[in-house]
Image (cartoon, rainbow, N blue to C red):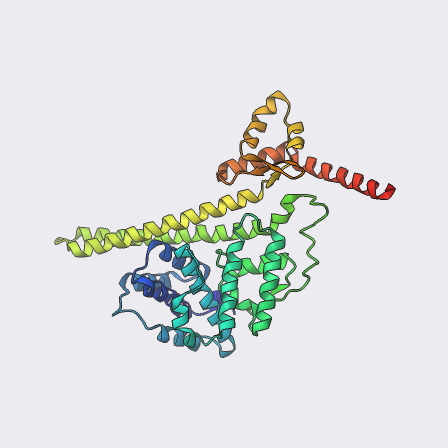
Length: 393
């Protein structure tokens, strides 16, 4: 059962465990941690009422008011079928590790909260390591050098690890992906990669089926470099959609907090302490909103980067743009590539510092000047010459 289909009470307890982890770490929930909690709430499709409950819990949490993690995990297990406890706990540990990883920026593989509550989760060391691997694999999707092939290979290895530890591979996807994908987004993305993933009766099942049969990612002499990033692009767009939805929900939360702040200020006798608390709540959500917005910007940049060739066929592009009226277009594109000497000649690589708008313009110029058709034509010529060489050798 994907977690979006679970009850409101289940979702509330699930997210509150993550809140406990972020609080237990240093007795403070900062903007980075809050942004991860808000993104998870969006992925799980929490109702407005449950979002309010979780927000209230975050605002009021202290050593005295904190709900015991043991109590929350017992509630989670009571609200789910016993046959799914292993999957739910693996998913929960994955989301705990992700929240820690995302907020600390320095992942050392050690999350003390997981170690302290290992018995409550009822998971073996191998199952916990499986969750770690899922988090690491999820973040690799954002790596510029990871294409559809590598995503597929990573998912296949993860499926093999799941089989080795006796865990369902779906366990790490029932709450979505750590990158921000919903469970449906992960399902469709991996299914497109030939990793037979279907949903039957609410149960998401992934098997490493058709590992070598995916027709959408071709290796015919690199017919188009960008063909290798089609599914990655689709998954990043889905994650971007989820992130924008979170931004919308956080704006609703901020508007609510501002209305409460205005009510406090309108009181005949302004309670300065209440006013400061309200201001702190608003500023914390605004800071979290900035973090989420930054994430959306990174996703947009990653999507735009998949539309541009990492290595530019400079001579072919020069031929297409050597007319005087097209020279400014050539100069603009080349400004976003840097020259590197490699064995076999000079290579032009895409600049890491290019902005999203600049990348979009580079992609548009290359498309409209017929660059990708020129690459295919060049590739076909190389294949013909290669075949002739071996034929008459």
